[in-house]
Length: 130
Image (cartoon, rainbow, N blue to C red; front, side, top):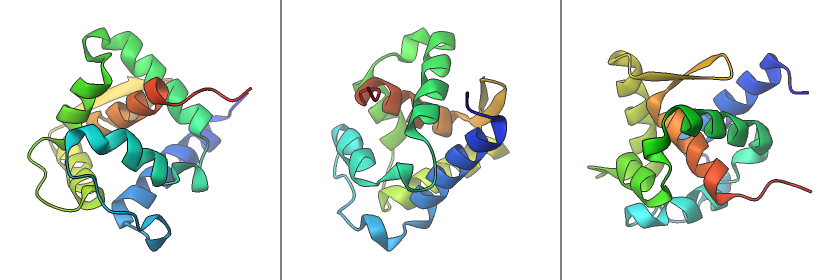
C-alpha cells in the first residue's frame, strides 16, 4: 500500500525534475508532440518517486475523463503551442493550470490538469512491473 506522503513525494518530485530541467536527463527536448512518450521515458521520472503511483493516478484520471484516453491526443494537449524547451513549457503549463484553477482530483490528490495528463500518459505507455 502506498501512503499519501509517498504519493505526494512521487508526484511533486517527478514534476520538479521536469520543471527544473536538471542535467541528469540532458537528452534533446521533443521536436513534436509525438515525441512525448520517448521524452518522458528518457527523463527518468522515477528518480524521486514511484512510477507505479503516477500510473495509478493516471488511471484514475482517465476513468474520470475517458474522452482523453488516447496517447496522441494527450500529447497534442500537453505540447500545444510549445516554443520553449519541453521542461520549461510543462512548468509554465502547470503554473497556468493552478492560476486558472484547472485541476483534477485523483486518489484524493488535487493535481493540475497538466500533471494529471502526464500521469495518464505514463499509465497508458508504461508496463506495470511484474
